[in-house]
Each structure stands twice: as C-alpha cells, then as structure tokens.
Image (cartoon, rainbow, N blue to C red):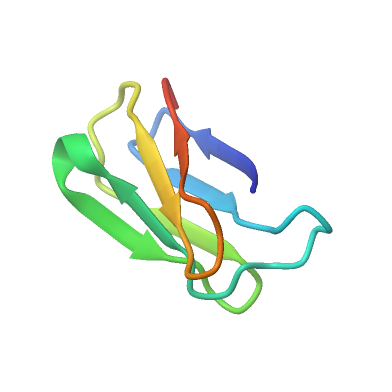
Length: 73
C-alpha cells in the first residue's frame, strides 16, 4: 500500500498499490471513527470528501491481502 494524505479541506485522497506498484482495483478504504468509506478506482486512486479536519485511523482491505491499518492519518 502506498501514499495516503489528508488535506486541510476535509478531503482524504490517495492511491492504493501492491508492493510492486500495481493498483489494487476495488480496495476498500474505511475510516471507523466516522463510519465512512470508499473504494479504489481502476488506477488505485480514491477520494473521500466532507471530512472534519483532523487525524484518523484508516483501514485498507482487499481480498487476498492482509488488512493494513494506518494511524494518525
């Protein structure tokens, strides 16, 4: 998994890839604190809008891969 960033505009966006850099199409991105999620597109990109500015735990899941939990995103 690679690069996730949070902006000051209440947006969480990034790109989900495997260890070789291939996009993980359909990977699930979920923020438990606000019970909001999305999925990665054909290029592995995702975006979540209308978030309160702050830091969150982000969970990334994909069938066949280990769940990745990122703290303080």
